Image (cartoon, rainbow, N blue to C red; front, top):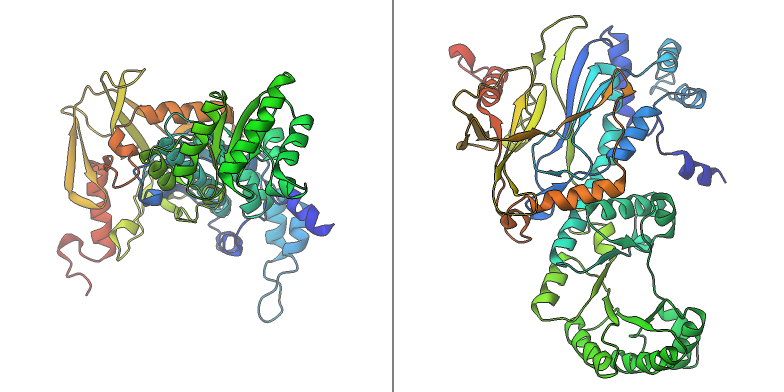
Length: 507
């Protein structure tokens, strides 16, 4: 019973965090710097799955968490039991009282749910008291990382499937109940047309679909009687799983039962293939169904599908109408982590007007963070490309508080290769992606629901060149630092390494 309560109550909880967030918060409080103001940005460094983009997801969970963020008595009672190695309390009682009275007053900006995003871009910006901005780090990363990974995987699978429906069938293989629910929602936002997950259907009003299992067939003396009994029970929802014993023979048995069903006013809606050579078997299945007069019956394919398998099957001429994708979608088995990060970029003392930009330097250049109060500007050109007549062609990361001159246009610099630069004309239309969500801890903008987020993601995808969406060796979409921000970052890196103003530097 205790475990069940934990599963039901773990979300939107102040203690859904790493201990070091609380030890840092304690140190801020103890040192008298809790009111120092800070700016953090959440981002990821590299597009997942060696792909050309990602689909931002998880914002709905982030908003619910921030709306309800509060340390309650049970939280504080637990924290009071934590000890140092010498047995003394880890946290002073006065600090726990401080947490109890803490009213969150953060400013939060985010790109909208379903936005197509790229490595190094700030996805969420958090500004406010440093102790508060620090406390939310782990939870924001938790909500965004997995959801964005699954939504991106779903978008890639949808791209591979062309115009055919794709359904998420992964609950039984997901990482626990929360992983299953999260994956179903994220997969839907990423482009899936529905799910087998009934609880997700109830919670999120996502279309639910399903056939029957091999166990149904195996529980009868023969396959035909199994199909017949199922047809009697579900005359308006007849999809037969045909590969329990012999797939081709199973299709013929499905046709036999389909004829009886049709004579009684029902209809065979389709069959599901779950093993074997799906290209060959789907072609043979289509022949049998068409010759028997079931041209409208759909062929559903499952069996460890992902974008690569689907693309290969289509290239082989497979006659598949619906893709049912489970394990490899909800577990993202070819990349189980997005690698999202949450980095400090600016600090100032409370009441001070000016920010001090800061940078985290790394021996690996792609891990060096970007300083400032950051925004992303997406540029577009008018072309006869899609329904909206727009195509996105570059993103610029810039500091909102440092005026980026556009008298002769903008210059952006690749954050991982300073020799790669792009000039953008001054009159080019654009959209700034980070939108205000919270001000002083209060939600100021209601989110679109997940149906709208899904539609937004699908529509946005049309605005990117096919090369960006390509599954293998995609074209690199230009994302760069505004040149003034790039120069500032370079200056801060040199300063951190002792190389500014003619200093001899460090070896």
